[in-house]
Length: 305
Image 1: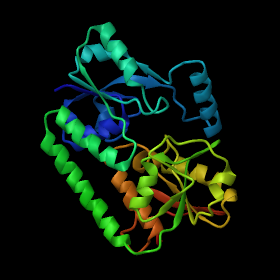
Image 2 (image 1 turned 60 degrees about the vertical axis):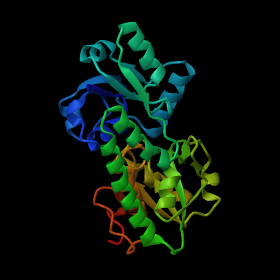
Image 3 (image 1 turned 90 degrees about the vertical axis):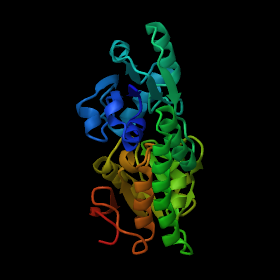
Image 4 (image 1 turned 90 degrees about the horizontal axis):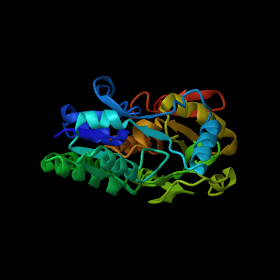
């Protein structure tokens, strides 16, 4: 089966299911694993925002949306040339990826008969269910069940390690200028890691809030998990958050790697958050995934150091 992924998270799912060799098309944002970027055809492009500030990115997105524009470009000719059997896409967030309706229109125009599977999870349980869904659609249902079973064992191990311990109050910052709180599956990660999410939107879209609204519940820990950024970018943004939470620990997390992409690495995110909230009860987070930020900058690469 020839597969095309229009989502970085779907690309990770395909590889986790052992179907990387069947993947022929990806997006310009598919950076995990490295093979997805090196030997696949890019069928979705978009603006390079690496030189923009969070406020500039937010303004760009709002302007494009208000004008009825798209943030992503489907390279229809490249897609047609791949002759895909199955295309993985989404309708959850126009800011994150190309909506499935655009894909359907392009396929109709091209006369392509590829099946389109839209992955739209709202919770951590929904995310795990998409792995089974992709596995079934690609003819390897047993691999999906095995993948979920392995991930669930890891989640169960974290739950057992933090059971009975006090649950720190955790504020999630998915964007800093303007501030957005965590939504969809992200609060579930905090709960699974032994924390109590506050000022969050479990199962619903992340929304813009004020710093006062985020600080009002008096969080013990603030997790800065910016969409579109790995740890270095998260640290820079977390440093701007410090003045709003003088009495809380502020931690930067590799948002794209561990939190915002609904793929298998969300379980890595749960383990990393648990290491922040309950140091000593669970293994330390891997180097390069989290950092505590203080007045002097990023101080701790991993909890407990």
